[in-house]
Image (cartoon, rainbow, N blue to C red):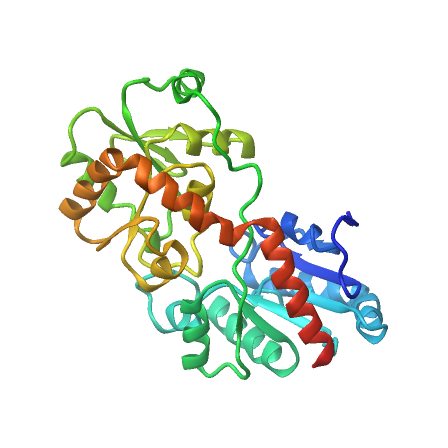
Length: 336
């Protein structure tokens, strides 16, 4: 589980919950991984945090030993309840707490979940160096009153996302028409993903446009579920554009995955998407169905230009760039 290809200044241990997209890239920074096999919204909050306590009691000595010996413990999610407090620690905070805790517009988290989340943030604020994936989350944390200054550390896009040759052949593999203008939607079905706008958008587009959905069903979409990572990457590569009308994100992985796949992006004109996409995507008011439809047509017309912009932008999210950022963060944690 350790990659020795990239030297790091210290031993690092990553503590994570479930299967987070950043996790495999962490190995590129030479980290030992300790994974917790539960998720807060799959089992009850009580069982989740009881389970975390049992796991950390068992592993606490090892984590403290890593810190005492000059290593870094990296908590990969703020949802993890930190039952130990290593002196050399980093926590990645993925979500703007103001969006999660202060409104029900975006998240449907329970009272128990929100209380546990606030409790965890308070604990991490006492001992861990905070990092975030976007300027948007940094600003939200600062306004929330989280102590210290979070360090913006964008994640890596996985190497599995890349161009894949003949899109027509790929479409045959998935039973999709070769002459369609394929728009890809990939996300959970949380309210913040704003999926209800997509059927309205499709109603405004010519018939040659086809919505391909990875996730929960949508009216008029071709839906794919239970896909392998390779199949998901192939769907990115065969699509004419990703359409991502989210209302709230901490980062927005599909956008950079599309860039890496040389697929144009139509996304929401919200602060976090401006942080992540820059000028490489067409950004539109996510509640403006006619505007989103126009942007989808423009993405097809200006495909070549958008692909080139995306290729330049995705270089910011390469694995080597990510590893360099993490090495700097770990060095700071050792001096804290």
